Image (cartoon, rainbow, N blue to C red):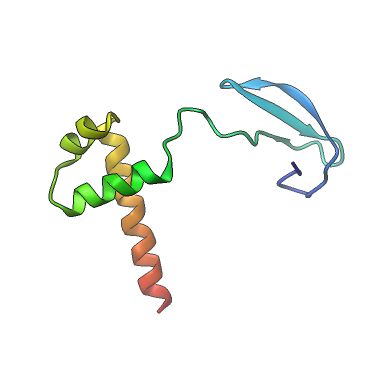
Length: 91
C-alpha cells in the first residue's frame, strides 16, 4: 500500500477513523485510509439494481428486493447515468 499523494511506501499507523485504520505517510505527512468498508455493496448487487430499474421497478421496490436503502439504489442509478453521459460526450 502506497501513499495516494506521493506514492511512497513508508507509512505508519495513525489511529482509527470511522472504524477504518488510518495511516500517515512518513515522507509527506499525509493522512489516508485504504480499506473499504465491509458494508460496501458489491458491483454485482449494483448491476442487479440497474437491471431491475431498466425492467421498470421503482427505487423502493428494488431496495426491498435487494435489502438495501432506496436512497442507495437511487444514487447507484444516478451514477450509472452520469457515467453513460460522460461516455457519450467522449464520442
